[in-house]
Image (cartoon, rainbow, N blue to C red; front, side):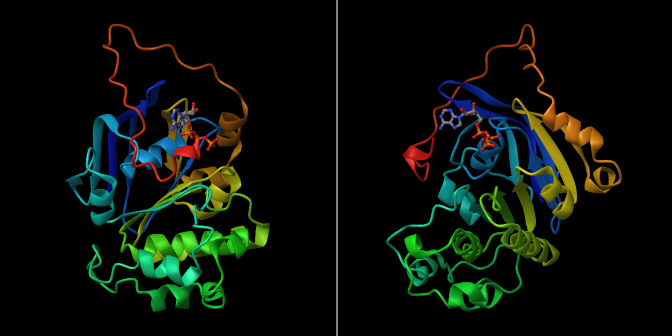
Amino acid sequence: MLSVDRLCAGYAGGIVLHEVSLRVRPGSIQAVVGRNGAGKSTLVHTIAGLVRASSGRIEIGGVHVAGRQPHRIAQSGVGLVPQGRRVFSRLTVAEHLHLAAAPWRAPVSGGEGWTVARTLELLPRLAARLRHRGCELSGGEQQMLAIARALLGQPRVLLLDEPCEGLSPDLAARVRELVNGLAADGLTVLLVEQQLQHAIDVADRVAVLEYGRVVYDRPTAEARVDPAPLAAMLSVAAAPPPPPPNRPAPRLWADTPTSPDPSER
Ligand SMILES: Nc1ncnc2c1ncn2[C@@H]1O[C@H](COP(=O)(O)OP(=O)(O)OP(=O)(O)O)[C@@H](O)[C@H]1O
């Protein structure tokens, strides 16, 4: 179970997440949608420990992890598939996989762990590309590699930040199918999606972030019946809410130097 409770986080320029609360059950997919700049990546980065929470709780399987170093949070069972894949252009697929493999780490959720052989069985396209360098892969292959790398860390919670971005409809459908299968195997999945329809297709619940606040969080079954309210929420620009009166200003944190790539923003 991933539980986020009244989470606040941001950067030196200001607070971005305002008391965000979400609960994602094992084996389920929670989609998070929202307009550009709503705070979706900040949310996954904060859960992964790359951005420091200024207040609130993040629990993985009942253990409070907010404030821990990113590698400690990864050891608690959080895997991140970052936006833009972030594969190393000069390393081969095989090198990526062997660097990411953590066979000494027992799978946090128990059961069968992820080995290089098992990830290649799941993602056979990578098996045919083992000697290719990151820069020689297609966008879809890079995405598969980013997912394989996260799985090799033996996660029980998988955070995916716009995994279908820039992929052809076929490949995007393949990625959604893959994510679905991982959740069916018991993984807890938080999926940031730019496209509402993709979120509705794959997720069990969908939450809307607006100016860093959760303004909607319902089962996708409701949106499948009538997606109009959700679509309207994402297409009509709302003014940012005024700050609440008489509340002390939240502490602001700079992005930590542990961010995977300082040129990210
Ligand atoms: N490293 C950073 N330093 C300072 N501000 C940042 C940083 N990263 C993001 N922000 C700001 O935080 C806010 C939320 O950005 P975030 O990337 O979380 O939004 P998003 O919903 O993921 O957007 P997108 O859909 O465009 O990826 C934006 O105003 C953005 O400019």
